[in-house]
Image 1 (cartoon, rainbow, N blue to C red):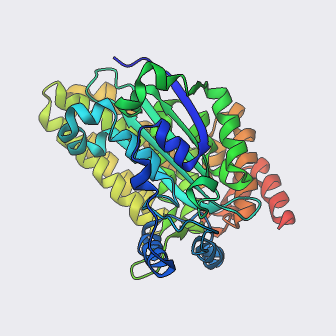
Image 2 (tube, helix red, strand yellow):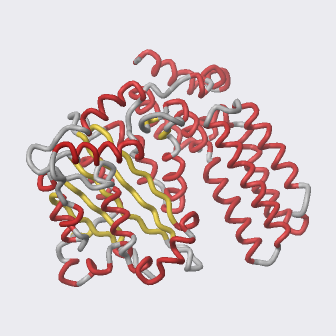
Image 3 (cartoon, helix red, strand yellow):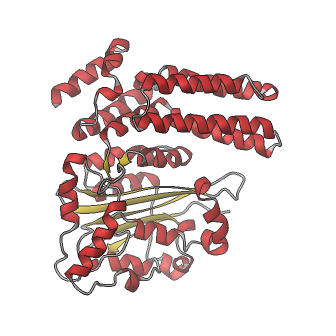
Length: 400
């Protein structure tokens, strides 16, 4: 069992590396000259998610290629922060003691999101977050670590780093009594404040805020859902923040559909563990179908009406097959999914009244600022079905 203790360490890039007992010299190694430095950077850029619209991507890419003032040092993961989160996690006791098990179960135990962005002062920064689920325990505890780097293109000594982690995900070598004294404790309320201040980007903070305000079990799911907003078409030069996908993802998240998918998978897993193999396979197949439909919808391969209809057909088929012995449990779950699909085009309306204004206010600012709010969210259907949505969307359109 791992008690929940979260630690924070801040300083320049090299200092934080040393506190975390990561190989700071290796991760701060300098390239021989400008040509080698830029070649190393350019090899990494195509795989880095960029928090910017397609129209603004060139500006961010240009700033990421700016040469540091003195030491030419770039290591894979610098520009998106994963050099800290991933490096620390794989040196934690989980992975050190049973690397093969956790790598084999990555799809079950790990969710992550990371990207490069420009803060409100136009400075290149990095954000990385990993959520880890201990599936070896019956109660499946959750742990996370995150890294924020300000001025990620500077020399190591000029990069400002904030690293936060559950103690269980720290490198084993960093968990000595003496070393832990170099890290301060931090609670969830203070964490939100630190993240907001360090990000120094209202838009990025509003995009990430659901992860930090929801329970761990839900945040684990939201990590993966928000990650889908970054896109890189085949043959394109780099990732960007896909505005159309983001609008759809927001609708799916706020409707509760993503969390219901999680519950569906866990029900299937529970059936399998109890020996109901046929029933579990039926539910796994339904989960896979819904995931496939969702991906096709997000990629623009099918329209919303088709996504809803195909998914409803799959749910009805599953509910009428091999689940007679567990109909009470799955009847409720399937009915919830059907109701969510029926209301998906006006998903904001389906939220609890106490949550509605908070989430709409957060969504409206970030979508207006990024020009995400678009016809893919079917504004007309919102207006027809709810006067509150009509008032909000009119206000948003007036602010454009």
